[in-house]
Image 1 (tube, rainbow, N blue to C red):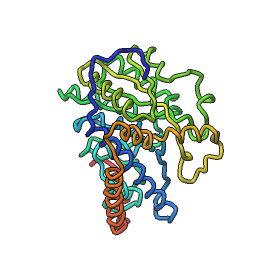
Image 2 (cartoon, rainbow, N blue to C red):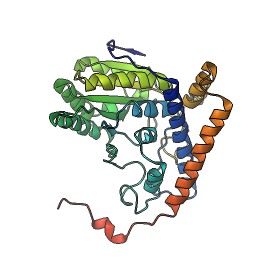
Image 3 (tube, one colour):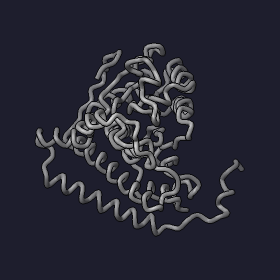
Image 4 (tube, helix red, strand yellow):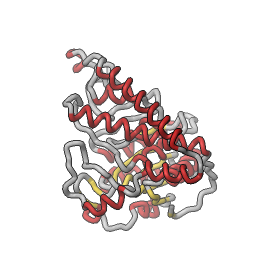
Length: 330
């Protein structure tokens, strides 16, 4: 963990929280594996973008938020959705295009919002959500709420103009805002060295006069600690932070992409840093996890996912006339 400021906030990670972080990462992985299976069966509507290898970033960040905080995830952030309280059932309804899903079958995947949980779905033009998240943070502050908005962006998306405009505005306004750069080393098929020349994208924070950190995005304990500090700093009125989580996308850009362009040796190196196995080994060594507990956690999650899958498959498709509803303000 490195950055340009020292935090005044102490973050305690209890054994119970460590098990929760582990459980949520496993839940994310197993849910995505089920989604891929459904995709290969031809049952999924639209594309599938999974986060294998980045679960520590999405789960660690999502669990660092409080219930009243607002989450602005992007297309690979299922772990953040689940950490914020979204159900596997609702996620599967979205992917299956069911009429009782969050978007009533009008969109697929996790391009969905759930204002009951303070989750705002992303648009395909990823960086465009940064100013929206900043505006939400400032608006809630104006209403007297102690709320933080957290937004994700990929390293590729950090190169667009909205990144600069949104982050600069957040800095000037001292908005209660945290921006996470998910640097998984590939913007679709473009490697980082062809996208920018900086060693760390978090160094851009210096230009805005705000704190910046780069952390090991495969270490969920480190991610949680740094993001939690940034969230509480923002909540206290000390302004935004920029955090770069360095990880590696261990799959293609989407389920149809075989990632032929990825350096195979580098892939093998990062497979050894699998965030779930990494935490599992750590918790084994300190005595927080054991084999019976791991088996129990996985069995419960597999049962939950199986029940959610069957319920989602049994759910109705949308009515044709719904396509013209909810498009315009009344």
